[in-house]
Image 1 (tube, one colour):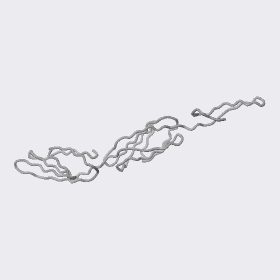
Image 2: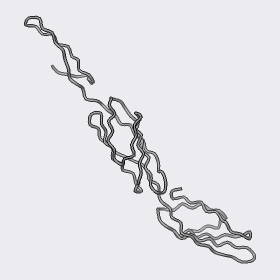
Image 3: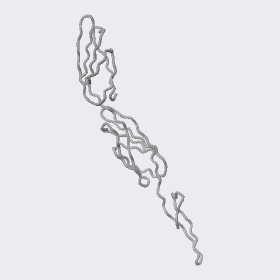
Image 4: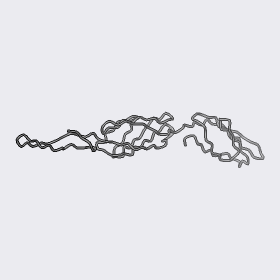
Length: 173
């Protein structure tokens, strides 16, 4: 999983000693060790197992791929947010959840939330190694007001009624 690899000795003839080399200048003498690599790559891993009758060695190439750490930035215009993936580890797939029932598999989607509110948007980015971490952050959507008014006249007197929707507390006549 990611950069952490668990190795299992499949030697026959009941070995009593093990010597692992992990291809990154580290070793172990455990029967079934786990090893965490510093970064992605292909490593030549060798196991030498032995008992009183002798020893034998097997080597295999092991490829490890660092999983993405998901992250994103966003900008808001009206009720639409535009998202930019800033995940590391070269993701190749994305799952966005917009907290309003919508989702996307695009790398850098735009999403119209339609109404004012705070939405907890989450991204999980993945690559050929699997799905990385999930990253969530609140996106505050403030819909712009829609100006409107009605009026009645009585001679030279006009009475105005504000019918603006989405008012955030201030207006000017």
